[in-house]
Amino acid sequence: MSLVTLRELLKDAQERNYAVGAFNTNNMEIIQAIIEAAEEERSPVILQASQGGLKYAGLEYIVAMVEVAAKNATVPVALHLDHGTSFEQIVKCVRAGFSSVMFDGSKHPLEDNIQKTAKVIEVAQAAGLSVEAELGKIGGTEDDITVSEEDAMMTNPEEAKYFVEKTNVDALAIAIGTAHGPYKGQPKLDFDRLKTIRSLVSTPLVLHGASGVGEDSIRKAIELGITKINIDTDIRQAFTRGVQDVTNNKPEEFDPRKILGPAKEEMKEIVKQKMRLFGCSNKA
Image 1: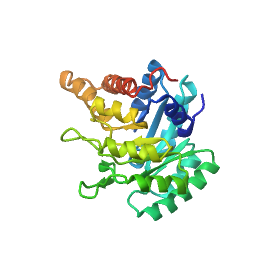
Image 2: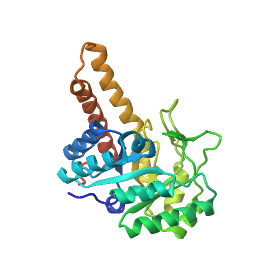
Image 3: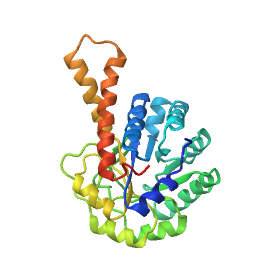
Image 4: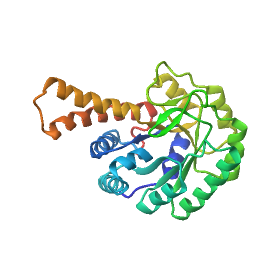
């Protein structure tokens, strides 16, 4: 099966009131874990790479591995750029074979964000890709992008309506109280804000920083209109647990396959749990 766009996946999610999981990847084992989970759960899936992930693994490596995975998959798979902050980076991903890109212009003033997003949309849509944008600042750290708690601010519903009208973007990431990275406490989501944004905007809405958010909060966010949910930290932690379990219990082990294999299984289980929670299991 060839790669599909975010637009295709989120249209069905919106119509049937579930969310598609978007899982960050940095290497082969993570890709395998995500795809195997999607196959076993019969779930559509988004594999996404951040700028840091591309810097680590290499753009060509990521694209080649995901294309092989998608070709052999029997469920819909999208390859998405997560938090692209430069036009040049996005053009590289468009040319390399991504099926979807995110332009994160949230650090810019509203009109600048609109202008830059529109430029990305023009290029991406001409190549048949879909585009996600961000409005409002999501706190925490995503690779080399850090937003302090002081700077983190919620998405303004009226600005969201204006932004979508001006850009006609395919998906919009909104800030309603989540953060990137591990949480020190339980995040409190602003559901009233989400409800208001949903009433003003028909575009699919995206929740970033969902690792560590309580299951009840996730379910309510989906009920109120979230159709794409990003997961990264939970996968990293599962990977580390798997590796540490082997190295702690079998310190003499030196075979990478026997160290990374259990890590892959840990990650796969987390992805499957998320797919069931998001309601995308059996939606492929």
